[in-house]
Length: 171
Image (cartoon, one colour):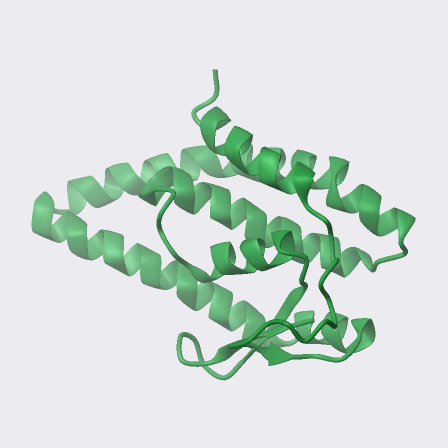
């Protein structure tokens, strides 16, 4: 039995039930910067602002763990956490890809959705799984927010401003 089975099972169920991109362009979503079409949305995925925001989000989580480690048991606790993080990453990466390939990738191919969209979901989904396993299911972070937007039928495609004060760009 894998140390990620429970996390994969919970998320796989959500992913398999998803109505991919069913709400893009509806204008129903408040609190986000909107984008008008697929071309613009895919273009935003290629900008550095999104990568910087995602990296900052993960960096903030690591800083939080380091701080708690120092408070609770010194750097040994951080080293244990780091070792566990590194040990689950390959399995999380592979499992997230497998779930993505049998769900979103099939939908994307059928509806001629660019591969960059599938890759963006996979990256956020993979990080969501790792963070949930390491920090708990209730831990909020940018990758999880983006994964949940995908599963709600949107395409979170970029970031405007500097994280965490900026806004996600959503189609």
